[in-house]
Length: 119
Image 1 (cartoon, rainbow, N blue to C red):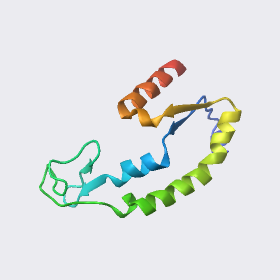
Image 2 (cartoon, rainbow, N blue to C red):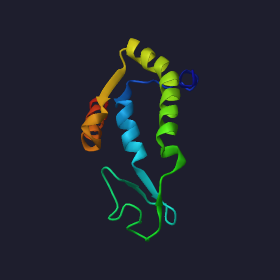
Image 3 (tube, rainbow, N blue to C red):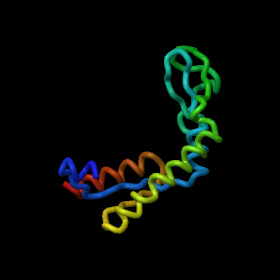
Image 4 (cartoon, rainbow, N blue to C red):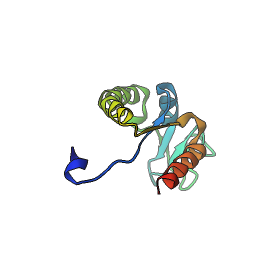
């Protein structure tokens, strides 16, 4: 409705598919420095020491919103709120799904290619 009111047109809607378990694994692996706020991921961009920031030596901690229970709750809300949009754009033939399990470099390349095709 907002897009219609602003006369904006959606050519494509992109959905990056990733299993809930993988989302939980990735997000629950995040750690943040209490001092400088730098963010690490224990799975794919870990600090040299799991509890110490490489930059400032500050303590690394897991934010409350990166804990499994919170992530799963957010995923339920996301599914409820996003499902109608996915259905809408799918019916319009505008939904493009990308496989998020392929890794960020591949997903970025696929997304970049899609944007270039739309130009």
